[in-house]
Image 1 (tube, rainbow, N blue to C red):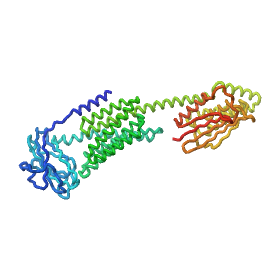
Image 2: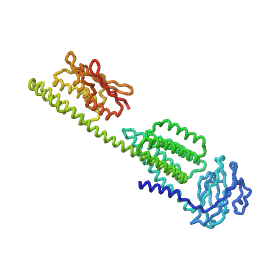
Image 3: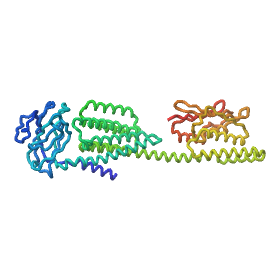
Length: 552
């Protein structure tokens, strides 16, 4: 909370800072043609036009009357933002060039900075004259925007801004790479992680493209290419941010929201074609409104973190409205991304809690599996039967001991596993039948159909169904109980069917499965989530149990 207050204070300080201008300028005037006398301060330009008009690829001049309100602190610098190539005259003295005016024209950059000689930097009126040509992008007539300030400050201020933006861009690049790797290497695919990684990468790209003009010289002929890229990056971010919130907060109408937002952003692009800054502002507004709708729904549904996110959205709106656009939009986006990161930490905590629960469940299931075979009445009855067999037929008693040891060996081998090969499960069932034949002195027959040896299954679930069949069934007329395990595979699922062919015991109350069925359902949930069905019911020939497992 303390860091949040410091951050808000920083924003308020920035919003309250307003730089004092040291100059005043009058609207520029234009004249087609070429005459070096037009650079002189004594020339009368009252008859010149207030608009440039269509100059084709001809030379034209621009004159701006400027008044320095105070002497500069250090060398005076002049920043010019305009299209074309031009020579710069200050009070009739050539102080620099941007591109090459002579044919064939070499396009200048949209932004250029020049140093004004100290002898021409006195307080009072001055004249800025540009000898210009715009052979390319002739239909685009941008005005001349000038700024006078300390020359060192004009050069350093973009570098200072770039340093902060580079730090921010680096952070988002590292975050994007980390979350891409996290998504790619996670068994449990959380698509909010992928979307967050994409947003971080888009935001990194937006920062780089926005400030690339300070790294390389971009001719005015390619100025709009950069603006177009910025527009599409902003379009994409404005689409993905509400989508992230809608998934994170389980918003009901995701498809409707996404369709409406995409249509709105497309309409903004078409209706404001060529108005790049205004289009980006409208993109951001559409994104903000959509996000607020989702978060308000989340607050109504009492979703965790929704109030924090709403606070962040309000702060981002304040930043955009009270700071100049280039800085405000990035601070606003950063606040929103931090809110997304906060939601992700909440989600990670939920996943950790689920993992801890699964670990506890796995441990409990392991204990249940062991208890199934060391429960007192099972051991007592088995040992009593063993004593009888040893006394009556030592050879059969040895077989009984070997069968019992074999079952315990398999149980010990599979107790730590979440899934085991189906052949091990079948071996466990056959060994158990060998033990029970000695115990109950009854014949059991085991059959299989369509079993795929490559399949895996949670341990002891078929064994549990087999135990229920033994406990709740009586032999047929031939003195036997038959068990049939079959397997089938379909396009979207696979199914195990376990049939007990016997006479069902008369029940005093409805049979619901007890602890055995609870164990089976817990094991299926541990391994397959909610992608399973378990049905166990009586049939005229005995009992049928089906386990249907759906593919991912």
